[in-house]
Each structure stands twice: as structure tokens, then as C-alpha cells.
Length: 502
Image (cartoon, rainbow, N blue to C red):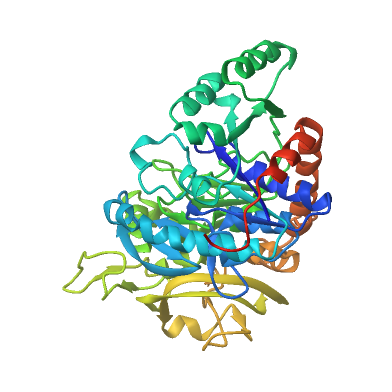
């Protein structure tokens, strides 16, 4: 197997996009390719067919490689649930919640899981395209590193550094990063990619020559700024939504621990739908639909929602005939109460019990549990006189019970102990579901839009799978055009790792 690692000089330098593009390029060149990210920190995740959880970027990269996502593509996933702590997910399953200092000590064990996944993939694929995390020059995190050079040194693979010129200081980023690496790590870096360039390339050429002379390493290409590239984002939320002719307006409260915001991409990308994220200090108003999104810490985010005055905004929205949709954590917020007897998310108490009052918009209670539900499901959504197949996935802790759930939104579920999911309120103004990804399918989107606003006038819906495929092929074409792909392929071919662990 041949291994190539893409590291970045900063977070959001474009590593995920470059890896996705290279996965598709090498597949198109006839290789069998697997994406890999040793350690990922993200709230936007995906569920694999075998019921594991990985970062959204690795699921996208798997699609780019024309293979189904699997847990080995992202053996360690960290999902922050506070400023200093995160849920640690190993090989797709939640291990525990850890504070940063505890996890730092755990890294030696985590490396074993990383190496195990690496060598399993080495036995099956021609190419392993690896994405680093953050920057390899984070001195405070170098000890027991598994995300960047620690992994690269362990498996002995070459590295290409990516820097974002749009941030400014691109030469300082590249030279400074290289200078902070050890001698063996510097030797491992085989070249640079400059990302998000806009302007006249001739004005950059003297700088590229200087960089190559200064470092002795080649610039392997300069990728243009792709203004309208729209692929699943792992962390960054697209707050700007350019709408030419808005026919339905949707507001999504931007919660501190919002998760799986890619749920809304098919809506956000539709030029006839105005989807906006409501930020701290702003009001929820002037919209047809409010969507309460998923949350990694539903108790904390519900408290935040109330503190922002958004509960009053939502109540006013409903009084004037508006509609509300809750997804996963947003579903749980709609009920009477969220109980947390095991202190999964909080040790705070309300009226003598570990709980927080919900928004009280539907008669049910949620109890958070230690075991996380992770599954892909299908069922039948019935709403606004329409009935259609729905596909999605569940990622949540807790179970909801109560009178409101006797009128479900989705029935005939394919898996799980329950045959139904979610609810439709008696006044038909509120619906909710535990399923993520429901807008990926046009019939479901059309049914929900019709429920929100009869005769809404939206002419078409986004087929996110077709859209994603078009974007991936476009990205691969850009990589072929602007990167020195033959040189990169030679670097790749030199990155041979055995199929057996050392």
C-alpha cells in the first residue's frame, strides 16, 4: 500500500477538501483508494453501515473514493461537549467523556487504535490518503501526537503541507511550520500546496521561487479560490446564504454545540429558500419555519437558547401561525423536560432532580442515557397529505416518551425497538424527528415545504447526492489542472507501508 499524508499549516487550511479531491483523482487514475484521518475533532459526524460514528469529512472522502464509509477511516473521533472536555469515540463507539489533560495521557493507547486501523486498510487498498488535524507545529501537543507527524513517523509516510493564502502570511506559515519540525519530520515533507489563491498568478511566482530556494522543497501547485464549491463541511458553518428569489424563509438558531449542520445543506443550497442561522444577540423572526438543530450538549444548548430569549421568539412565531421542526437534540428540547440522571451532560439540578425544563411545546419527556443510538434507518414519512420513503441516520443519547409521540411523523422504521419516530402536534404546527439527513431526499423535502407553506412556489429541490457527485468531479478536475499531479503521484508511490504492523 502507498500512503500520502496531507497536513496543514493551520486549521481550515483546506486539508479535507484537498484529500477529497486527491481521493477522486487517484480513483479516476485507476487506484483503489481509502481516506484516513487518525484523529478528528468535530461535532459534524456520520454513521457507517455497521453502526459506527466517524467525522463527516471522512464520509465525504469515502464517497470521493467510491466506497462506503467505515470506522477505520477515522479511528479516533473527539466530539467537544464543553470548553475543556470531549466525548472520545474509538473505532466508531463512544468510549467515555474526557477532559483535555486526561485525553493527553490516553493518546498512547489511542495510537494503538490508529495503527490497527491503518494496517487493516493497508491490506485492502492501493492508496491511503491521509488527512492531518490542525497544524503539525503545535508545540504543546507534540508529545504522544497521533494526529500529524506522530502518525507519519510511526508509519513512515511522506507529507505534503497545505497553506491557505487567503488568510495572509502564507510564506511565513509554510517556512515557520517547517522550521518548528524536527529534522526527520522536515525530511518527511516533500512539498507544498498553496490553497485559495485569487488574483494574477504572475504576481505570486517570485514568492514561489523564493520559497523553493529557501526550503529546498517544491511547490506542488496553487489551487484557486473556489467561491461556489459546496461540499459537506465538517466544522465551519456557511452563514452567508445568497438567495435570488426567496419563496420560503427558514431560521436555525446557532447553538454553541450545534451538530450535523449538514442536515440543512439541501435547503441552504436552494436559491429559492432563504435559510439563515440566527446568531447570539439576534432575534428569531420574519420566517416561515424555525428548525431546532441537533446538539452535542442539549442541556447546555437549551439553557443558552432560553438565555437568548429565543423561547419567547419561538412562542410568538407559533402564535402567528409559523411552523417549527425539531431534529434530534432539537426534538428533545420541544418536550416538557430533559432528565439526566447519570449526569451524561450536566450535574445541574432543577426542583431536586438532574433535569432541565424543556420548551413545553409537546407532551413528552426525554431521559438521557449512557448508551448512544447509532444507526442508519428508513421509514415512511406522512405529512401534509403526502406519504414518502425517508432515509436517515440516528446519533443521539436518550429516549423520549409521552402522549405527543402517539401521533408520529415517521412510521414503519426499518431498525430499532420502536416502529415509529418523532411526532406531529395536534395543531399541525410542530413536527420533530430523531433522524438526521432527511432533507437529502427530494420527496421528503417537498413534503415538509408543503407542510410549511401551501403553494410555496419552490420549483425544485436539491438532490444532495447528485450535487455532491458533481462537486467532487469538479474538484478532481481542478486538482488535475492546478496541481502537479504526476509529481504528487511519484511522491505517493514512494510512500509505501507494509500490510503488516511493525
